[in-house]
Amino acid sequence: MTDFHHQTLTELSAGLKARRFSSVELTRHFLARIERLNGELNALITVTGEQALAAAARADQQLAAGNAGPLTGLPIVHKDIFCTDGVLTTCGSRMLSNFVAPYDATVVERLSQAGVIMLGKANMDEFAMGSSNETSWYGPVKNPWNLKKVPGGSSGGSAAAVAARIAPAATGTDTGGSIRQPAALTSLTGLKPTYGRVSRYGMIAFASSLDQAGTLTQSAQDSAMLLGAMAGFDPRDSTSVDAPVPDYLATLEQPLAGLKIGLLKEFFDQGLDEANGKLVRDALKVYEALGAKLVEVSLPNLPLSVPTYYVVAPAECSSNLSRFDGVRFGHRCENPHDLLDLYKRSRGEGFGAEVKRRIMTGTYVLSAGYYDAYYLRAQKVRRLITDDFAQAFQSVDVLMGPTSPTPAFDIGAKVDDPITMYLNDIYTIGANLAGLPAMSIPCGLLGGLPVGLQIIGPHFSESRLLNVAHGYQRETQWHRQIPQGYE
Amino acid sequence: MSLTRKDVENIAHLARLAITEAETPVYVDSLSKILSFVEQLNTADTAQVEPMAHPLKDQVQRLRADEVADVDQHHKYQRNAARVEAGLYLVPKVIE
Image 1 (cartoon, rainbow over the protein chains, first blue to last red):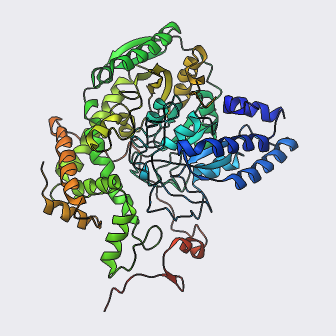
Image 2: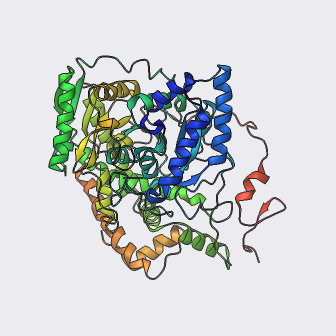
Image 3: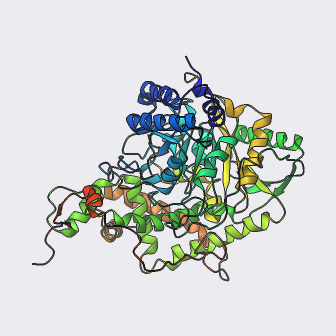
């Protein structure tokens, strides 16, 4: 029995390059694990075994010819929000349960060009709206650390797949915490890059001023490898930023002595589980031992992140999801008696309860007479929050705090109360509102469930964040933990 | 903020969403709760604040020249449509 699933992408890459094993062997190993374990986890919606093996065979030819890159032959899964040419792309929704994407998202295209093998498409909250992966039309994803618990969301399938090592890494998207919160709840390294760093082309839109693609991996080093291939200017995304992509691996080993860490006062004050908070503080001590300086900082407007988000994100969602009309693609109702009936019933049947709730919230806050009171005000508060972050980064290099207020909760525990569910994202939303890059790294276990440390940096500081995360992972082994039953 | 059943029916109509009799009270309750929750935004002093339109400072959305940038692939794209005829999307009759 091989131990491919105990290895990080970095280690697997070295093994492929040294020809210790082939990409086909590697791909077969993970496809066999998917076959055996995906049933209980429900992490993947689609498995693309045949395509994966064909791509792996091509990768092996490149490896044999000596013209392979560092990612050639490495298998991963893509969140089912990324369009994949010729492959079912559902976004976790009944609306798109018959949608075969006619082109690849830029993220998929770039990784594929770098030789990455797609094993399949990961389950997710419907249209990325959720924090527990319970809103998926394809059913909830289970957390491999405890099958009764949620894996977090919306990138819950990506997180469960990597945590259970049925894939060595995954892509995800993060609009309000959808990479970082599931990473925290499943003991993974999650990275949400700066807004505009990674192209949104072909990534099904939820809230376009907040959405950003990133990675769920076993280590910061793996994340650096993937981000290098994913990031960069794309003329097909009008908000893509035209800035050079640094070599994220080159700066990983820089010493952390003198690093100034700002502790987010509001995060430690607000709704944080005490034992969870202690693990986060223990992680901060590791940084102190590495020579970092800790200072408390206050972002007075940060407590307004959640209400700001729940105006701005639904507003953008109501606009983005108007494209689903039952005409050009997606679910269409039976026997519509007129065009209005076609629109209304196709959408009413195609969307789940949470998506409809957010479309209606957005429709309301943008409607005549309410626009100023809700949407415009939220966009003003959004600037106040963004300015608070900018002010903080004048005196510190990075900000740290918890990723999530508690470890993973029971499946079903919060589904009936949207506000309680929304408050799961209390610590992650700020970075989205301000467009900042942020990570979550594993920093311990509480009652057998993982806890994450969040690191937030100024715009385009991904190199620094990865360096800071890697520094911790050199000193600790939390990121190497595999849940029982998946070793 | 408390919404009525009629408010929710109106919002659902504006959003072109058919919602069932049984769903309506659930949305009346949850949308009212969400709107009350976001009223916290009124505690911030925003009198002198410009609304934020882009998360990155001084970024503007690019424009591009109006040139053909893609080839015609309508056959491929229309494979996802429920009803197509002669390259056209079919919908119920709109004009009598």
